[in-house]
Image (cartoon, rainbow, N blue to C red; front, side, top):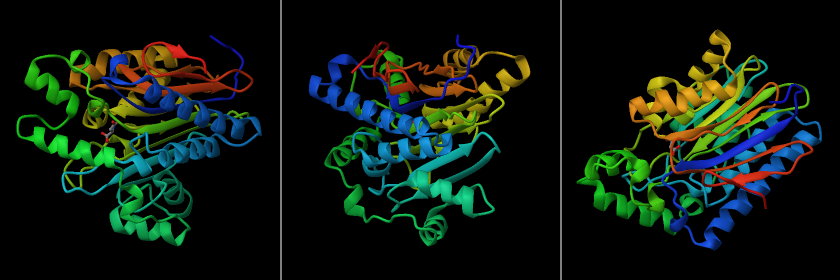
Length: 333
Ligand code: ASP
């Protein structure tokens, strides 16, 4: 464990039952390259003396623009065949925060969340009201064709076919119908959860976190997940850590998983690693919660625990090489 604070950043692109056999070498490489390039872009903001808030905004915007990930352009469809995105951002220095939910036409929901934080007296805005407000502050609008990806549409058709016999969440569906745990379920890339996020510590000692998602394929219109809920899918506090989650949103919300990690650090003096392990590996599974988190504390310690087969992730400390991973091990590109 380092004692001297080192600026750094970590990102994720979702977690789930991702088995090696499910991805071709080319697909795997495409994910790793995207993660690598995006973590380097976020780190360069920090290396130039930029703020953690700017670094996570840049990283999550790039993840939203990349169709490989379920956020922004790559967002999944609701049961009504629309997209509805959620995002949040939090500044650990002042514990300011902004979030949007159920937005349909914003290119970068994370930038919209930041507009809510910086230009409104509110924390969370939803739907058309949020879209109208952030548009007045320069948010970029896209029409439905921008968000349409064939892969996501096929996922919706498959999810609709399965809906009659499966429960709400893909991972839960498999365990409920087959008696297997989601981790043991046969791999289907459509079963991976999806959300993107970034956490950073800058050279000034400030923390920030941002999270963005299209939610879950075939979700009910109007459903809001943990991503937009502070303390559940996104949280930052300079006194403890910056955290971003991915996984079964309802379980993260019911346990306020990220705030739970920060509270264990604050009240019980646990390290980020100890607290994150307890929440993700012990407490969340008690609520059938599957997924993972990324976190960085004020010393620059980075953790990326997940209780699923895999999590798309990358991290980089300033002055060090980036690490990228999908499965349990890390790859260096
Ligand atoms: N947590 C997200 C949600 O529930 C989904 C995910 O991370 O895969 O909307």
